[in-house]
Length: 480
Image 1 (cartoon, rainbow, N blue to C red):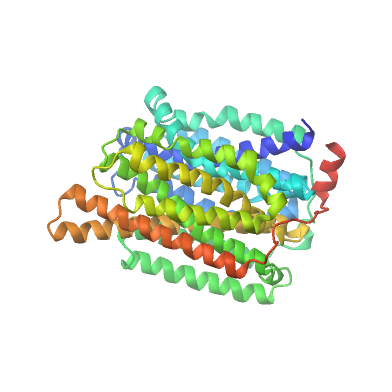
Image 2 (cartoon, rainbow, N blue to C red):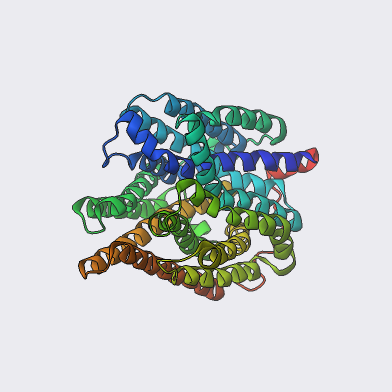
């Protein structure tokens, strides 16, 4: 194993730790509520506090990596995330846990925003980069499902603090591995300029956006709280756009948004993640509330997805991207995902897992294994080497906001359809199943829209990445 591949494993471990924590908490929420005395209305903030910090800081964290050095930002993020995890485990009251979760989100943003940029720098050769991105994308595609499984077992065997304490040894190993194998880079220097007013506007705007999105799921899309947060987000992001047009050193240079394939890839990713994130959450609920599976059995029901993703993304996707281009692989994956959602849109109330659920689970594994590495490759392909951290932060921001918005929208649609049918006299379980079917049909429409955008906006042959000779790449080539 060369130093570059060892460095890739370290970066994947950092990404996996962050992604696992995003879903591992969901399984432990009832135990956390019972032990710390959370009010039912406040419990969602165990998740929301993390999302607000994480989604709001990704773009700023990516730019900090470009300026101050990506390894330095990565190490700071892992260290903060690890310390905040210990604080979460030791929390004795709701306020302490929510604050510690917010700090976890800050650390997660620092870690995640620069990871993809470092992968691109470590592997300048197109074929190697395609394989490396496929490996890196696998951690994101499979991590959330593994989090559900891991969280259930840890909570049952050792109690909810264990889901946070497990990050301590993992974080220490990642820091040690990064110091040894990930090449140091100096960045272009803070003197190159950090647009502090722009950073404040976009960070506040993205945080307000996430607050509006998670608030929609909690209070409804038309509630005064949701509308106020959405208006504030729009005003802040609009001010940020105006600031970038006049700033001497803009945080998001207009040249980045003038790269057509980068913008199109981020839009495709937004629509795709909105559908896929909602699928995982809603299907987990339907398996328990409609089909009657136990929580542990529900976690195991999702296990085929990461297995198939691993086989496809680690064994096939990189080679396919190198041979046919990321665009062709992306179109294939999206085309497969549509019938997967349509299979769930017909799931009957008395459905059986092997015949009604497992086929869709396997299709999603295949589609995810092709789609996620390909769209990640396209999102980074057009970025200048000096902007790799920014492009990485932008791609991750698109993922997080797309996932949060998709979940809120699909969950709200499912709940509304269920309420309408319940008011019309349908039995509770029948109405619930119909609500989930409507949400899965909407998810199929989102993926169809992503497919159309990819067909129209992405250029043919795009995704065969040219070498990038960055500081990181030069250092890693010498080391590897």
